[in-house]
Image 1 (spheres, rainbow, N blue to C red):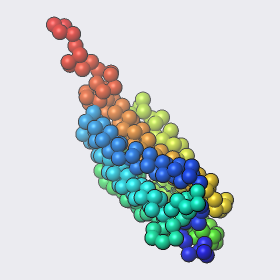
Image 2: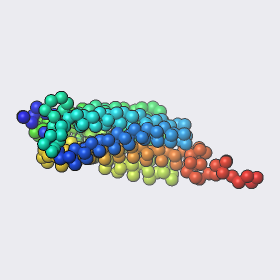
Image 3: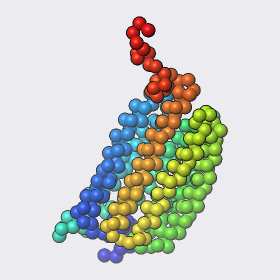
Image 4: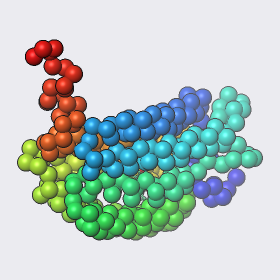
Length: 282
Ligand code: RET
């Protein structure tokens, strides 16, 4: 069949049993981890000073939203292949596989992830709003232009690369805005935590940078290795930009809350004796 009738390379490639199972497993572990961490982020709120609690709450929302999207990708995956002649063959009827839903989901999760930054840095309310909007505009434009481009990945390299370049320009604009927020974060962090925002910046670059690599990967060829490598890359990126990023921010906020004199945070860090821990009669 003409490859160009399909939007994603998953529908062009016959997978070995191992490859199919790996793809299933990658998607399952991803949505499972996202759902499990809803509980972690809701729980971790209690030790943070009240003004920072919105940050893990946003992480919990991101976990729920991404978890549902990945669960859908997982069922697409299972519906889009049939086991026939000793291999998993793209189904000729019914459901095709698509990565496009990921881009729809990022439209929700990415602005939430970005808003967590000025919130965590404790900036003034109007500045939080201003920075969240200034970061979200290029972010959404980056995602939507990428969405248009990814429909070209089954062979229309001009479409893939042209929209990829346009999307990258919005990514650069986004990075300039993120960098400015990081700088405000350095100014606004308590002295012992001033090194944190810059470390987070490098983490941000390394992990958000995985997405354009996954986007470009189909140009290496239409085969099972590329399909699995791309799903793996997407999943590593998802787990690091949302889940691990949320854990890092929560740990920073715990230390920040303790430094600000919030006792439950100091106790959670083991830096202040909990009342119940004092020896009786002391
Ligand atoms: C695209 C298209 C190709 C060029 C670039 C891209 C960047 C995507 C990024 C996505 C980040 C997504 C996150 C999702 C979390 O839920 C759109 C692949 C630069 C950076 C963090």
